[in-house]
Amino acid sequence: MALPPELSDDQRKAALAKAGEARRVRADLKDQLKEGTVGLAEVIEMAEGNETVAKTKVLTILESLPGVGKVKARRLMESIGISESRRLRGLGDQQRRGLLDALT
Image 1 (tube, rainbow, N blue to C red):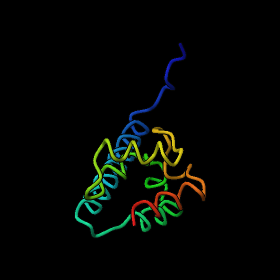
Image 2 (cartoon, one colour):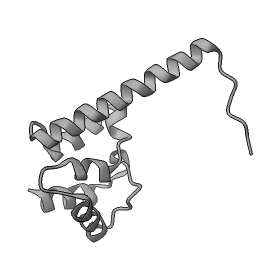
Image 3 (cartoon, helix red, strand yellow):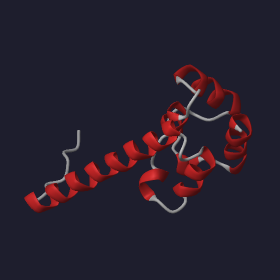
Image 4 (cartoon, rainbow, N blue to C red):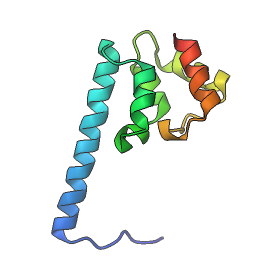
């Protein structure tokens, strides 16, 4: 098994700070979805310009929407043909349209 790269203390701190910021952005996004201040269409649009949002899993986003739980999110993704491991960046045009049509 390959070993992780050797990082200096400064590199390690920078990586930890970047990871922490990404977690904060995703947590804020999920909170905004739960509150209803941001919709699915806006999140998909955000993913085109924001690397952190683009790397967020579709399942996580759907589960954060009001009225959509874990089971409904998985069933919806399965009916549209989206893998559970798919990230927002990886959605195709038809998959985006399918999600938006199903949830609006």
